[in-house]
Image (cartoon, rainbow, N blue to C red; front, side):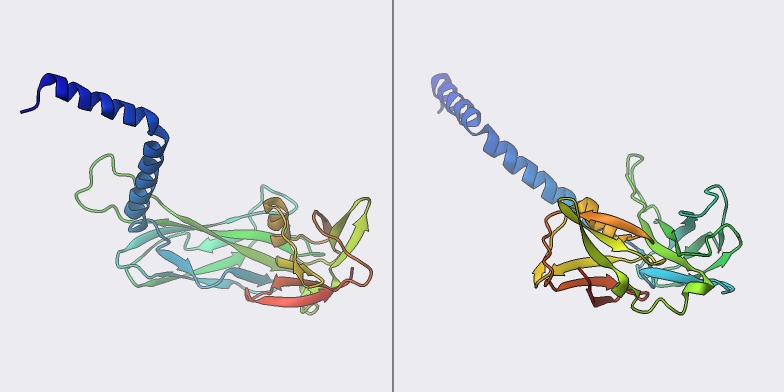
Amino acid sequence: MWTFRKLSQILMKLKIYIANNVEVLMKNYLISFCLVSCMLLSSSVYAGLKMNKTRYIYNEGQGDITVKIVNDSDVNYGGQVWIDNLNEINTDSVNFIVLPSMFKIVKNGRQIIRLKKIGNNIRKDQESLFFINVLEMPPRPKDTPDSFMQIALQTKVKLIYRPTSLQKTRLEAEKEIKIEKVNHGYKIINPTSYYFAISKVIVDGKLIHFNKSVDKKLGLFSPKSSIDLSGIKVKSSSKITIYALDDFGSSREYIING
């Protein structure tokens, strides 16, 4: 039978152990908490609605284009679609309508969305970039408490409007991209009227790693613009290779001038 003195000694040892190992205990607690949280979320947080493309091209003169949204889950979903109007002359104007803008997709079903141009404020001398947004609305599970938290995921993909004058010259326009030396560094230049999505830059066989800000700008390389590059050295004899995504989302290789 334990005496009070024996119990006091055990409690004192436990107190000393906790004091000496508080960092380890807290670290293990946080790891366990994160693992449990991920396990709880992984079963309910994922994109139930998916689009059939990663980018859409709207050529001037088209009546409309279609976007197919698929529900590959085993529950019904609600959805909402809208377009962010970016890079047009009048930022308050509406250049596209979406039909339907709200919908319901049964499990393992699909919904066809039609995009139609209605505005006249889009530039004619270069491409314009928009974004198609899809917000999914999952059903509320049965017998959930009032404090139940439900997450609605939003998917965003590019919508590029291409004027008639640029439709025949788009193929391999990435070859016009060039890298030039400026002051104590370099910049990559897009002299064309097209948007490019550059995923990799390789100089003399070496993959160049940029920071997140530069990577983002390269992924949305706008017409007639330039981007400052850090951590890159180019010789007159260097071979510069870029990888960029085409209209179908496929990665293609191009050798450009330094």
